[in-house]
Amino acid sequence: MRFLLVERRVLFRAVRFPAISGQLKGLCVPVDGAVGYQWRIATSTAPTNFTLIEIPTTSASTTFDKLTPGVNYIVQVCAFGSGNIVSDWSDPAMLMCV
Image (cartoon, rainbow, N blue to C red; front, side):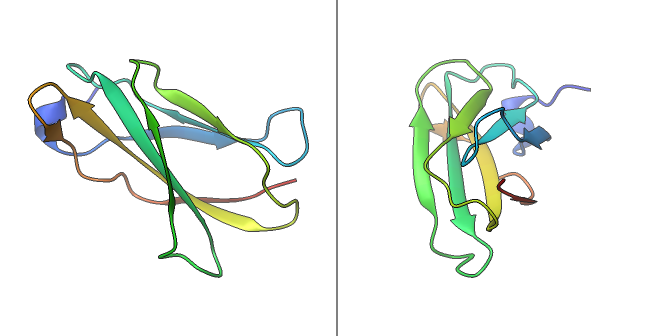
């Protein structure tokens, strides 16, 4: 199932543990018409204090590094298209970093 940018929401595919401690990898379903993605990550103890990461490519994945093992992180993603079209943020995904 694919979501168009006009549907306003991006669907997470997964948040996974890479082979390296202190990293999480975020994957989402590619959005038709997206020219890039913006990701945000926060700890579960400060869920409104997000760090933003903008990926100006059509890659629907990113790696978060320099994270603290043993801490739960909340990750969200949105897509952006040409002409300042931006989707809503995805539902949050939470995972503990190892």
